[in-house]
Image (cartoon, rainbow, N blue to C red; front, side):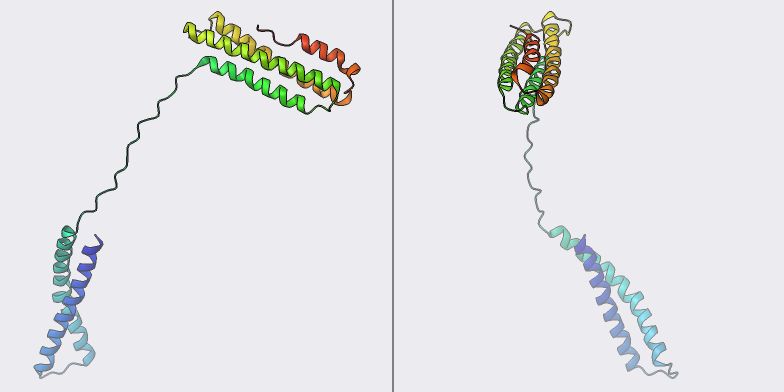
Length: 206
């Protein structure tokens, strides 16, 4: 549309100049008995040129611009490849519980690393390693549930996995409590009782 507007403006300007020049020539060539002032004649010529030059020129320019616009080659739109929709993975109720146990295992390992180096810490690290092994059993229970095609949350396999997630979370809290006590008493004799209790509370899924 920019071509049409520019053509209309150019047409109006050219029409005004042509008509204005023509009227000026006639005004100079034909003397008048009454001689109005130069300003009055200039305003009259300008009004006449706008009425009979600008308007027809704008109309003609619009037509020329529309013709030029229609003759311009059409620029094809760039082809945008349509990617197939990403398939949505079905909801897996087993993975949710396995990930909860895995998060507890990671947090336990991170908490153990904060304890001051001592024989008690080594014992606590062994307990953390045993928890990581129990996580493999959790994954095995989830695989069993998938293999059976269980979708009911009241299914015995799902209830077993749900208890495991609860036990892992409870064990995570106990590790945090023992680790905090070991900051004040890192000696093995002081921490032995707590570590023995913690080891007995380790989730046993195998």
